[in-house]
Each structure stands twice: as structure tokens, then as C-alpha cells.
Image (cartoon, rainbow, N blue to C red; front, side, top):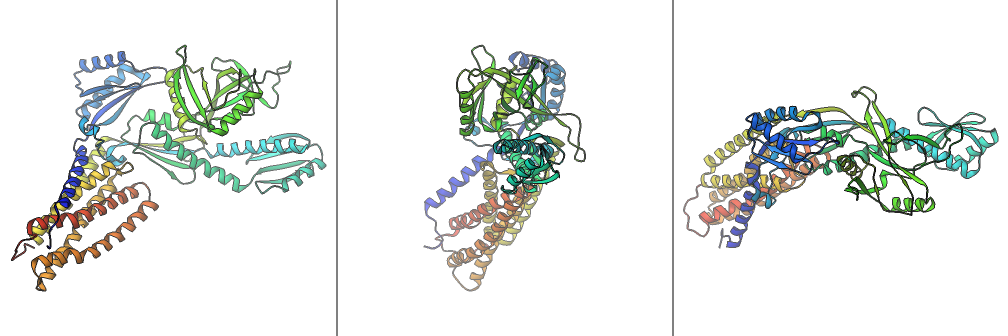
Length: 611
């Protein structure tokens, strides 16, 4: 019989709608204004701090919704932003500079929904507020590192070939000068270099003097690799911070954009993102002559206690081989970091320690710190700081797993383990631009977006009901179901983030979604004019319009896919919501409205349609 759906189809539609309602529901609860309190490396957050905060808030008549005491922080929820701001001022005055008191937003989703993994949509920077960073990669450090590699390679090749030279010297523009004893050695090495692929370019400065540097292609490859690896490592770091709704993308040849929605703790974010901490393992050189002259292959470094130690310049292993690091305490309750190496790093460490049992090995901690302020038009103001954090005798061979002690504070050990686990930056970065979008501006954007959605819905619903009566009412029900399914899909999908352009995509989808029902309704009218029976006109209307609706949605989907692949940031946000809207509108416009019409008219003797 025409225009009848079996019971199981109705049940599936009801289940889909109920699931959609369940996962769209958390978006009605919003977020609570909150304050997050974290400590600096020399302080810890304990219950005494919590008690002092509770007392000071009570004294100032500042009411809070709840206190959540974590392992490393305290989260306090408030009813409104006025209380939040007042509490921040009071708590900051109480704790001083030893603690970071940051504004934050905490989801207000009930526990029973959270247990079902029903969470609100992830909002972008323009809707939730947060921090925007523009970071510049220090390409000078990349070129300097390449110059060091060139120097080591040349020294190794000269030694391998048995060619005598007076000295190797670094020069400007990534160049290395080689001074030979005579013209014969210079010519011999020149001939040897010509047998290699063009990884280096060289020119003669005199009969016994060569100027060598890495090729332009190698320099460009090194710069590109540093930028891409830094982007990858920054993404790992924001994941380690527990942030999933972030944007990390390239801008130009030297810069990276990082957006952290909902984050007001800018000090903590900058501390993690901008940190360039890494480790080097080097052998201690116990041999210095009586005059205290340091050999060319060694250099002076200091421990945290100020002790001067002579280390070989050659690095045994760097932090690049670390695949995992965890924080723990030893039997003396001292903080330490447990290190896991990859296979290559494990083999290097095993081979080295096996051949140097009884000797002293140093763990060198390296980081870059800001020397002063800087902007996009000025030169980098980062300087290198290093110190020995651990000295240990090699008592036996060890490979993929070992531990580092000598760290003063537990939080410092935790942060070092986090940075090593996320990866060491290939080149130092500096935050040259920082923008904070406050919650009030974000709330205004959300309000305007919701108003746009309501206006679009109202206009579409009014037109459809006036024009198509009961069929228009069915289309209206489908339109509301479509909105619920879009919101639920955005809440479920892990990579989906709603932005202002995303709201524009939803509005566009809702307004255009009724096109399918317009095609169907007009085709039903046409069939009625052609003297077909009412039941047959409904059947043909839905069947004949299907191919046109499908073609239109496929072509739109192709454009959406191109926007997502080629675009970035807000363009991707628009593409995601539009793509989801296309899929849900196909379900609601074709199957949803058909189910409603079949319930009203299916299998009945009808003399007139309300269309």
C-alpha cells in the first residue's frame, strides 16, 4: 500500500531523535565562570591554601558554587562573572606572586549526562573567549645548528681521509673556514668534496684556505623541517595540557598561530608552549693541563650549585630520542624523571655506556629564555641558558630506560617530564603577539549568533506554513529536528569546533534545508494538477524529487569538502557545520517529513490535501 511506513522505521527515527536530544541537551547548561589556581615551581597547592582561600572569600562575602581540589590546582566555580572577577582580585592579593590565579570557564553539565559522555559543543575562540598567540620560530638558531653539523661533518671527513689541517672556524652566513697546511692538502680535500652530492658548496679563499657551507637547498629544507616539527610538537604540548579544542597552524615561513579557547591562564599556557627545554647527555672530561687551558674538544659548564665541570663538546644523546618520560620520587622522596628512549637512542646509550664504565656522565638541561621584549620587526631576543642537573658514574651498561635525579622541586620535575614527553622544540620560539578575547565579547557573539538562527528559522517556518499548510508544518518539524541533530553531531564529533562562521553555516543550512521540501511539495501539487490520485501524487512527489535533491546536496557537499581541505581556521568551521547540516537535512527532509505525512495521510481515503 502506498505511503505506509513499517513500525521499525518509526522506531529508528524516534531512537535517532532521542539520541540527538540527549547529546544536544548539555549545550543548554552552558559554563560556569571559574577561577583556576596553580602554583609556581617552588610552591605547591595544598589544603592549607584551600582553607585560606575559603576563609578570605567568606570574609569578603563572595559566594562560590563549588570548590574542586585537584592534585596540582584548585578550581572554584561562581554564579556570575562579577563574583568571579571580585574573587580573583581578593585571592591574588592573598596569594601574591607565588601562585597563578587565572580566570577560566568550567562546563556546568550535570553528572548523569557527563557519565553518558554527553558534553557541550566545543566552542572556538570567538565564542568562548581565550588566548591567541602568534609565535615566531628562531630561524637563526636553525641555521646555526646546521653550521655546527657542517663543522662536525667536515672534521669527521678530514680525519677519515687523513688530511692535515690547521683549524676549522665558523664564519658568517652559515660558512665554515678550513685552513690547511699547504696547497696540496687543500687540493686533495677539494677533490674529495667533489665526489659527494651537492650537499655542500665551497670556494677557495686562497691556496690553503677553503670556505664551505651547506647548500641553499639544505638550508631551506632545515628551515621547513624546523617549522613543521615545531607545529607538531606544539600540538603535542596542548594535548598534554589537556586542551583538545585548539588551533595550531602555520603562518608564513617563520610563524605559527596557536589559539586556546576557554583558557584564561595565559601564564601557564606561555610557560608550556614557549618552553624550549631539552636534554643533552655528555661525557665529563677529567683531563685539563696544569695551566687550566680547556682543550678544543671541551667546554666549561656549571651545575646548579655553581660547580664548574669540563664537558666534551660531543653530544652522546639528545632529547630527540626520548619517547616517554614520567615523574616519580625515589627512595629518599626526591623528585626524578624516568626516561624511555627509542630503539636508536637505546642502542647509542647502551653502546656508549658499555665502553665507558667508571666514567662520569653529565645531564645538561638546556632552555632558551627571553632577553627582553621583541616584536615582528625586531631581531630575536632569546638567549641560551644551560646547566648540569645531574652527574653520575657509569656503573654498568644501560639502554632504553634510565632515570634522572638532581631536580629541586616536584613541579619542576613534572613539567620537565611533560616537555620531554611532548617533544623538544627543534628551534626556539618566541611569542611576539598575544591577544585575549574576554568572556563578555564571546557571550555577545553567541547571543548574536542565536538571534540570527532564530530569525532564519522564524522566516523559514512562517513561509512554509503559510505556503504549504500541513505539509509546511511537517517541514517545520523536520527543520527543528534537523537543528537538534546538527547540535548533537557537533557535540559528539571529537574534531568539531563551533565558531562564528560555523553558526553562519548552521543558519545557511537551516534556511536552505527547506528547499528539499519545497521541491517535494511543488511536485506533489504538479501531480495533483495532472489528475493523479492523492496517494499516488504524494508517492510520486517524494520519489521524483529525490534525484534532484540528491544531486543538489552532492554538489554542495563537494564544495564543502574543498573548503575543508583547502581552507583553515574559520573556513574549516563553516565547512564542518555545513557538511553536517547537509547530511542531517537529507534525513529529516526526505525520511522525517515522509514519516509525518504517512502518519497523517497514509492508507486513508483523502479527498483534499492541505498543501
